[in-house]
Amino acid sequence: MARVAPLPIPVLIRGETGTGKELIARALHRFGVHPEAPFVPLNCGAIPETLLESELFGHRKGAFTGADRDHRGAVEAARGGTLLLDEVGELPLAVQVKLLRFLQSGEVRPVGSDRMIEAEVRVVAATNRDLRAEVTAGGFREDLYYRLAAYEIVLPPLRDRSSDIPALVDHFRRRHQERLGLEDLPPASTEVLEALQEHSWPGNVRELEHVVQRAIVDGGSLSDGRLVKSLLVVESGELDPAETFPRIGDFLTLEEIEKLHIEAVLRRCEGNRTRAAAILGIERKSLYRKAKRLGITLDAEEDGS
Image 1 (cartoon, one colour):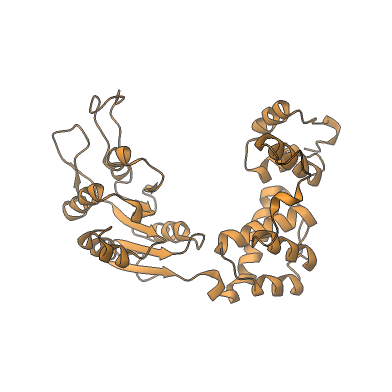
Image 2 (cartoon, one colour):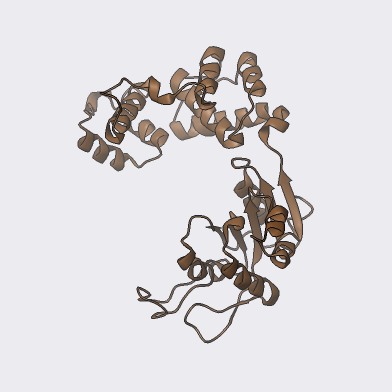
């Protein structure tokens, strides 16, 4: 990464889901030639095929139904900086052709425009697929693959680098301590670290962070080996998480699950709404709205924030 970051060439980052591909892309940008320029991520797998060309290259007013104004695409938005094409293996062949043309010429034509626009952009692509196998199967263009993979970085799964786990756990401990507004949390115990290093981590670093956060919220620290082991059982799917909720009839509705989960988080936070909202990943005002809709009582004297 240190060798390729300052070089103005495309980079392909390959690794399983949760290994931190976007973090690597951001680091390449940060330590590149123009770290002050834009970094624009685009998830190719989350955009309908009919909108992909417009999202990539932009469109002009009136180009299609609903195009009521000019739209600057991701390439133009990233001009001078870095464009991350996440899940690049999801690109349909028709869009692959146009992406290849841009990589060859450094120019794009917005949908509905009759002129080309120059855009100097460093392209970083990320995928959890084996693009060489996709090329063989006919799902990915060979010429585009070699354009994108001028340099390839392969991220090993966490199960193959368990020696990294103590440093990652300490990083996540400090991150969530600050995010949740907690007092100083002691480092993870030896028992906890050993349990974490023995786990297979199918969800990779993302799963590890989730377990660390859950352990902090549920136990208040990273010292309880039994708690961490129980969380690993739930995360691995050996225990159905639905069994941890009281049953209502044969199944719980989504609203019932949401209510039970929010109430559990509020109890763990001793009524602190700011901390509860942070754990739930929502704004505090959204917590108020959900509580009102679900019939959850928020006692002012328990707020502590």
